[in-house]
Image 1 (cartoon, one colour):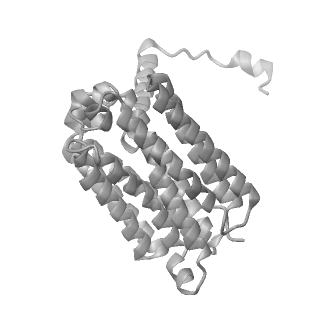
Image 2: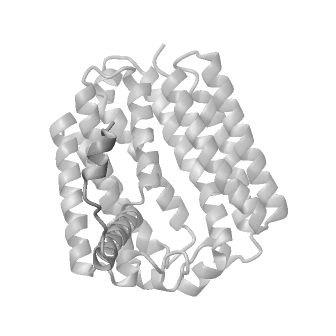
Image 3: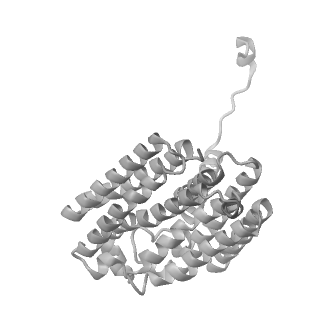
Length: 324
């Protein structure tokens, strides 16, 4: 604590209006930059991808022998995911301007030029793939690049062509499982006769593929008017009644439940079985509710349930679902 006599002797320092304005401007600029970076890389999606990679590696081999190597794979995967998000926003900048939820994105709003955005996309892709290769070999790097190519060059253009874009995008969403499996030497373990990890990872990939249909149908319903204005061929635009979207959501949720239960087989964990059963059942009930009601409230509930159920399932896979 400063002695009182010293406090009395210190000169008073008062910031002038110009200094206050300068500090405020700097703070606002930093917040704006942070917001733009977050909008570009979409960290929530990146976190989901990273949890998927960790769960896949854990289901394959349990505790990794090279924890540092896995961390670098995760860093590389984060960079590749960021690159795919940036590239997606470059290609969709015109349609993004027509949607209220995306019009303020940096590329769509013109705060980041297209050449600069491509520069960042290329740099993060090369750096991310390079880190994956250096840390765990060419196979995880190839899986990361394949995910990027499918998401950016196939799924993104298909959104303006056919409602089947969701089926393609779901493949890209499930491919990060391969990154974790390959980084944990899954092929070598399978060749040596250890098929438990391969079974669990195959079940996880199936779950991730099916999970995306109710998730995206909820989003497509909530923003169906904006998607229509932007020219996107989402299922809720082609069929405004929502019947086809609801049917796909329920069918995928029904199929997801047994696939989730298979996750418990390699570990033999009853806790993993119960977690998978609860997550799958809750997701199915939310999908049925949306199918019956087909309104914004049920779609929003399904969207939130999709995130919670998947995170719960992935957490259970990491905690309970490793090799027995």
